[in-house]
Image 1 (tube, helix red, strand yellow):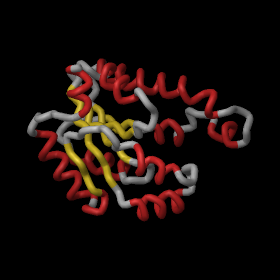
Image 2 (spheres, helix red, strand yellow):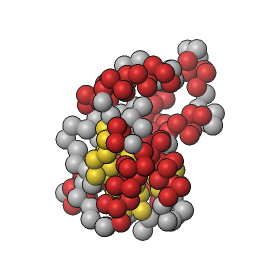
Image 3 (cartoon, one colour):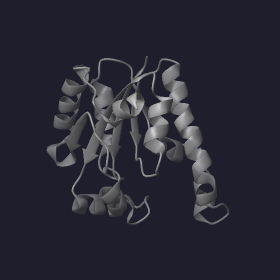
Amino acid sequence: MAQVIFLHGASSSGKSTIAKALQRRIEKPFWHISIDHLRDAGVLPTERFKNGDFRWADARAAFFDGYHGSLKAYADAGNDLILEHILDTEGWLETLADLLAEHDVFFAAVHCPLELLIDREAARGDRPVGSAKRDYETIHIGKRYDIELQSEDGTEANVEKLLITWRTGNRSSSFVEVKSA
């Protein structure tokens, strides 16, 4: 059984910063997995989507089906994961709970004030304008977490809080609920 620490928060909420700090501190060799890694590595033909050669709307479902399947494959092979993701599509939580049912999933919310999200999104310049606000307003609704982190508490405090709670082995998140349903 692999261990999965699932960081869930709005675009620009600080998931990557927490994941990198967590990977440096955690006592096991966790992989850090994110959609951004695929984008930044050139896996996706991003420029061609941007210039209109291809429509992201036509490719999105297949991309995420493959991405979600790869997470199962990594975990099934025995790799522990620090996963960053935004569950912004109906059914993804249930799909991932099913795919990762044999593994220990620790579900962590990453919250960030809306004003800060908007500022970070603008500064990054690599996200569709308004995506952080849309995520802020929708993605946490109806989900239960093993821990809820506040980005304004600082990276080191959040990593420490996460590690203490993760190490207890207590899980009561939406992933547990979906598995037992």
